[in-house]
Image 1 (cartoon, helix red, strand yellow):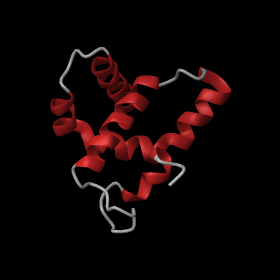
Image 2: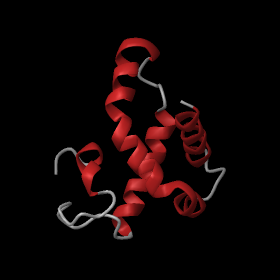
Image 3: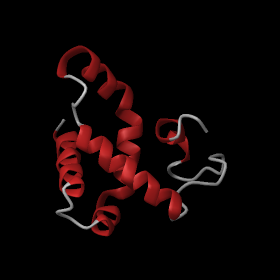
Image 4: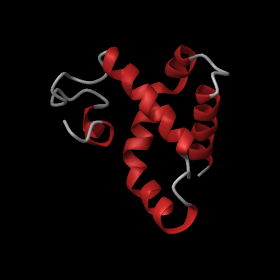
Length: 97
């Protein structure tokens, strides 16, 4: 939970434009994408059952922005089948693909 809160705080700083997106990408970019992708079912559960729809919304924002940067920088393969680091969670970020 401490890790999730830290990423939520980073997302808040990014959303408020208080930190540079490049800095966040280079320090926590792919990690935030992987952690959000892995634990999204748990976050969805807590949003539904206990903590409301805004739980970790800034973490989600951070992960979505970092996903876009990962796509631009080749952390995913074009068809998400090349075995690159972020390929396994593409359905979290691009459910219609």
